[in-house]
Image (cartoon, rainbow, N blue to C red; front, side, top):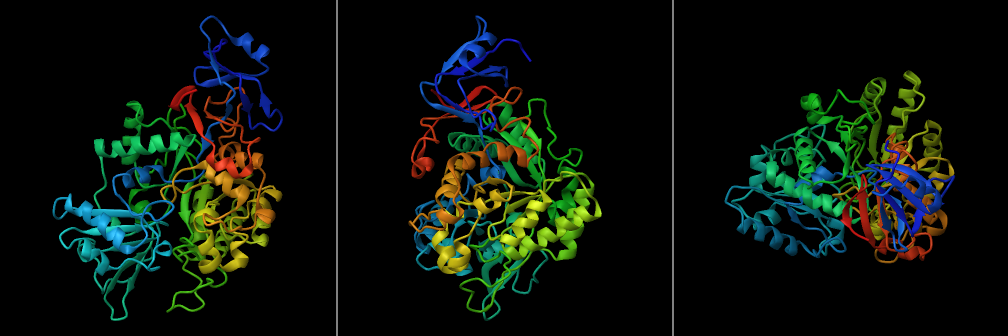
Length: 549
């Protein structure tokens, strides 16, 4: 490391997120690495005549926000699709709105090419139902039309899309998807799965067109203070190669952590394209812009699509499925074997598990892996973990595993969890961050973008205040956390989750110079204002990638 600083940040509030020294007056950076922190008089000793002094002008400097779980490369594809999100994420209020948006796209698309929408939420439209094949045939019969549910765990298709995907009314369900039919046996238009066979047929944007999408999402993440992003379901190298090209062109300026998919046809057929030569937490480049993360598995689906696996029935069950618990994706034997396989390889494993039934299966599999092949610090990651019970939290703590909570469910779907999906008792302890933290579990928060827009401060706000968009309190007194703890979940805790705590997540000597500058001090404003704090600048490796100050 250079002896003299290229840059010294000063004259503002600097929150290091290092518990031993939470506040300092100044930070010196050489190249892309923190050289010194402390009192301004001390930090100035690292300056020479070439050092640049950056005046924070009373603003607040923190470590850059770390995306603990999202799908940024997948979001880049969706940036080129039709957004059919409902309020407050979009403008849709009824099915007619969706048909109109898709029809406009179809009218501008050559006949025979795909028209694809994303973000549909059946619980937030007037009709309170799924899209049907008949609905989407109204968009076009000359274009295959497909729409992804906001959860990613349900998809909808018109007749031509089914034909393109090779799905007929006689096609049997597969291990990875369920085809829903009408009472007369005809295709309803609905498929329950995250690995949709029809979506697999849709040509994805490539080359310059995909790079355009990468540029869009890079700016979106940077505008929300993110310095590290994540692809939580990597399905091949092509999108990564495009990302590297976008980085070289300064169109994608975030660090990226890759979670390779560990299941399904993608893994079975493409495992050699998923960077098997790299271990978890290993960097793919000398600048630490690309990092290999955990292997990703899914135990169930999503609560708001009723594809999460619960131990007790949904509060309001589907009419034709009384006492409905929801499906699980794999049986216990399969989950045990696959987690043990990766565990023995020395890889970290992250498991998507929303319902407490799926969380139980995941716990049993992780406990079995440690019993069969003990590792001192495997850091299993329980992704979402929304309905985790108290008894399960104690076992997760004993495993020394991490939990990444999708806590903005309290904000976006709180009322629906309370009234429809889970009922009052379970909704009030949805994403129990405080209880988990009190047991010593390393907790992070995420937005699961593309499911909801990237916004770490909204995640922090939700963990603090636990209020729905409509104003319903979902247990702030019982499960709400303090502001400093919330900031840890999107900085140092998120770094720890990926074995990167010695590289990023706090402002300490030797760590990367990744920062976010806020207009106000989050520790001094009212708790209710946290989500509305303005990002003044986002800095990666001592380079400003968003804003200024």
